Image 1: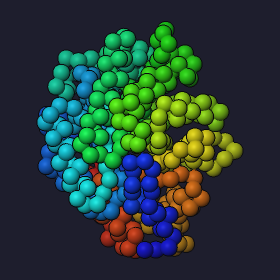
Image 2: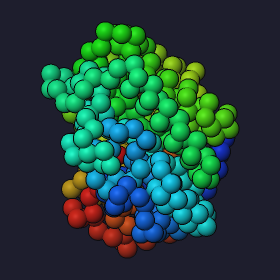
Image 3: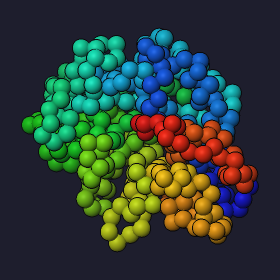
Image 4: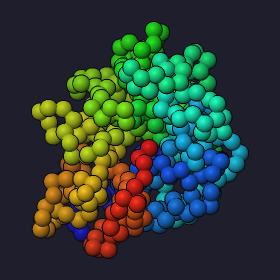
Length: 372
């Protein structure tokens, strides 16, 4: 193994997460589960990445048991006997290959497209019936809807533990349901779930609390969150470190063990006056382990690099591996999630470790997945 890569290969352990290295596979929507049931092919897909020695696999977004949760056909569910049996096979395959895996539990909220999922007539549920500020889609959730969705997350998390998963990730990012509550532009309610930052976070906090009660204290809960939204890349939940600290504390108190701070480019500073990215600030302010993410391992056409800049080699790239390794060596964050590079080449990490970057499958548009 190349010495500069050492920060990627330190073991990581926190509660139920016992990982052989610091590289995670980012969740990527694939639409390869007909009838919302993960197939043998899906199990093979995850096993190949585990065989590629990725430390933690985070599944594609999987929908909880609420009619409005799915937004696309072919996205796997995390409820119902058939779907859960499919996920049992996935866990067995990944563990047999020495890997660890957690499901990402998802509700698409007001981004839902009509006519998909088992209940094709289900509307898009959201805090205020908005897809984005000023653009209606679906219906505003009432108190019963809120209670039902919270229960659906808890039920799916309980199933994840029973199936042998190594933890669970709650999707609270990218303008989906939880994030629509966080985002003032889509949360225009007039009850206790809207208003201040703390009030807008209340729904997400109650989801985490219910999940914690369902899985116990030692089962790791990861929360993925973001400033940006698919509806608005420039949107922000926290304008300052102080606001971010207020937001994070709510979820630490509710039971989050690890934060997955989603950014589109891992090298971009989050606030003026510091080089720390969102994950770095999250670790500093929360004291919890943090996963960073954002264009790792992509070629120049996708604002990234495979081996550029490692160990002072020619053509150093400030957006490449040198920058990532420097930040990890400085303990800015604990893990890095890699998405499309691992989608294209399941052996990306092994080839990087063994100095075989020239063998990495070239990245093509055909390999594009949708990051969950």
